[in-house]
Length: 272
Image (cartoon, rainbow, N blue to C red; front, side, top):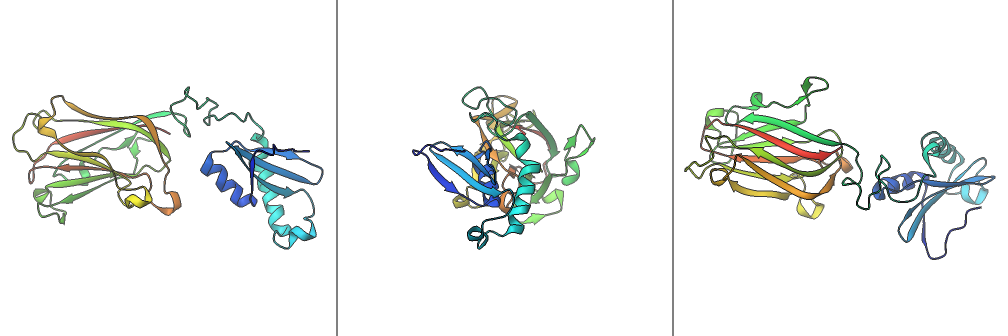
């Protein structure tokens, strides 16, 4: 029989809600199998989150709010998708088993990935190179919008004075940082019209943890090297399409003289 320490705050959930908590708090799923039920739980510091799934008939008093049909569906889900991998070590770890105290940089992901993509200013979306080396096809997650000198959207490259290069990978990731190569023709220039900036999750307001100005406008003509680097020195988790919102989009903004064409290459360092 399961006995929980009285010092722990206990939070009880339905199985469906418990699964959401597991994802939100990255819990290690544990369970105790009794004669008539499963007690499924996960530790979150001083709290324990738990739910009960009945192995056979739901007690009449419980069935008033938790139907037999729902219980049976929950039991099938638990036994097929969670029970085989549950009851692992409780110590916080990343998905591949590394301790997250300091041995692992990433908290929720496993593998380092360097996404590289390039485009030419004032040349339209056809200039984007964004290829998956596994499939040899475009990733399909990068879009370009051109603006004229008045700030209006334009489809005429000759009128372009600014581009939004929006990258929204079709997966969750933890971002470390990134960098960009600067063309020699731009570096050491004197127009004061070449600028780069980066906004994280641009479609959501700050109160929803969006519109993060990762890089404020940097004058590319004043950069003394051939590369501009942004390193967070830690990871930030950006889930794909969380709650139906574009929660992992990154917007790279280039301002430039009207119609000026230069090639740029961006690098996104992240874990997947």
